[in-house]
Image 1 (cartoon, one colour):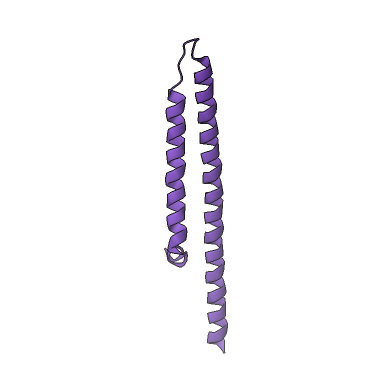
Image 2 (tube, helix red, strand yellow; image 1 turned 180 degrees about the horizontal axis):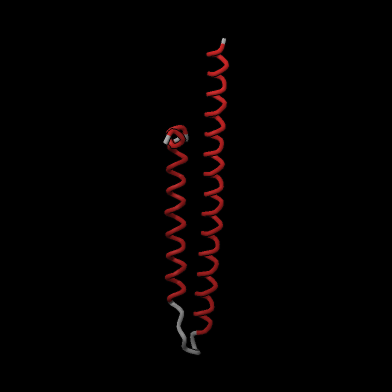
Amino acid sequence: MKILKILPKRANAYFFLCIFITQYLSSVGLALSSLQSNSAENWIVSMGASIGALFIVGFSFVIGLTITFLYIAAIAAAIWQLEKVSANTNIQSRR
């Protein structure tokens, strides 16, 4: 839990906001894909809805992956900073 205290609260808020946006976009994509109809007259509408749903879900997946990797990099930087600070305190305590 020390890692979450070191990370800025803004980073945590952005992470959960991006999770919320990703879930919202994927639910919109699923709603669009459920609007498809099997009738022959509406095949253009159904194709448009399915392509839109695939685009929205894929886009939100890419955004979610990017934010996840950025968050993992922030955690790794926080761990590196912790190790650097602890190494400095060890050197100072030996003197």
